[in-house]
Image (cartoon, rainbow, N blue to C red; front, top):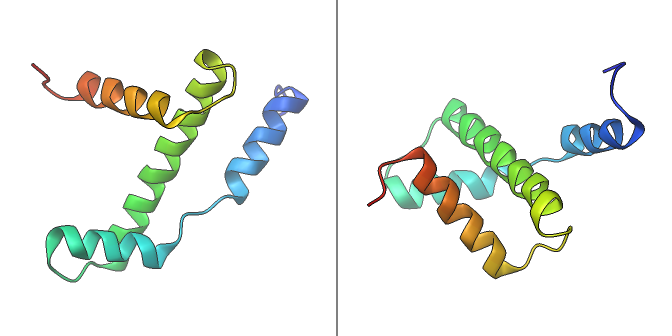
Length: 88
């Protein structure tokens, strides 16, 4: 962390302070699966969602000049989904 610039340190601190609501994630998981979801599973999905949002923001700063329109977010999420799975 000593090698981070001031901007990088501010972004890291914002990332550390941010959180995704446990109850909302639990409801989504229970709706999708139709079963009760354990606390560790909720924690894992919250972490994955936080990383995904961080990647969206980072890519938005790189490619969209900081403006994240819904159309751009959809295009980015489809591109990342296809890069990690078998898309035809």
